[in-house]
Every structure is written in C-alpha cells, then in structure tokens.
Amino acid sequence: MPTPRILVFAGSTRKDAYSRKLAAAVVPLLEAAGGQATLANLADYDMPLYNGDLEAEQGLPQGVRKLQTLIAEHDALLIATPEYNGSMTPLELNALDWCSRPDKDNPTTSGLAIFADKPAAILASSPGPLGGLRALVHLRDLLGYLSMVVIPQQLAVGKAGEAFTADGSLADPRQQSALAGVAKALVNATAKLRT
Image (spheres, one colour):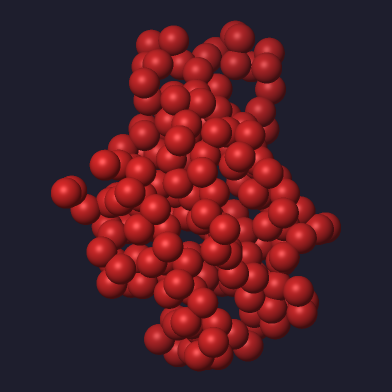
C-alpha cells in the first residue's frame, strides 16, 4: 500500500506563530507513524480576499490554483490553527473558501473534489489556557461542510509561549504524546480510507 501523503499547514503566516511551531512539530510524528508529510506555508500562495465578482471577471488567482493542486496531490489534511476572537483566522478561512471554488479548466484538482471524503486532523494553539479550543469547533465544522472526514482526535495547546522545547517538540510529555496520537490516528484513517 502506498504511503499516505498528508499536507500540513498553519492558519498563520507570522514567522514565530505558535501554530506554525505546532504544525512543524507534528511533521516528524506523522512520518514516524508511517505517513509522508508536506509542510506548506500559506504565505507562498498569494490570494486576495475572496470576492465573487473578482472570480467571475478574472477566474481563480494563480496562488489558489497552486494550493488547490497541492491539496489534490495529498490524501489527507492537517491544519494547526491559532484562535482569533474565538474562531479560526481570516487567512485560513479565505484560503479554504478560495480552494473550494471550482476551476472549469481543472475540475479534478479544484473545488469540493479536492476535499471530498479525505481525512483531516485539527490542532490549535493559543497563549491562553484553552489553547484555541474554541477555534477547533469552527474549523471542524468548516472541514465537515467541505465533505472531509475529520478524525475525533485533536489537540489544543494552551500557554503556547511556554509549550515548545528548543528542538521544536512539546515540552509537556502528555501533550507530546497526544500530538503523536493525533498523527497516528490520521495516518491510520488515511490508510483505511484509501483501501
């Protein structure tokens, strides 16, 4: 059976964002669980704020097409989100909104076709004690609306400013174990759904 390919990205492009650290921390755990992880940065996919008139006049921006293709090439998705006012970031919502739009020239690598029935896992981080837990509720719902199969395992890392070691792993052994559990569950779900 081919190795499950999992696309990982954070909902922030800030250089020192805790969500980016969390996304990077899960990559070796996905690979240890038998997956092949690709860590993407949404900053590499330039896209304006979604606007239906812009889409009608100009079609999908090149950055959207590139990200759609990357999602289509992977078997699963893992998103690490910060929490902005109790929800996910405008950046990740905008990226998912754009990527859900169909491209008539590339129907199999655009729109809902790139999300449908694929497994997904979600993580959150926040300086606050809840660790972005409220954002996970919204993100789980959104991915479900995109027809993804969101696994029940998740992790919210609170007090994220103190959560990471110098090597990028989580300092709390229980959190590190929970992160490994999310990674393993996603790899296993992806392998099962691909058979």
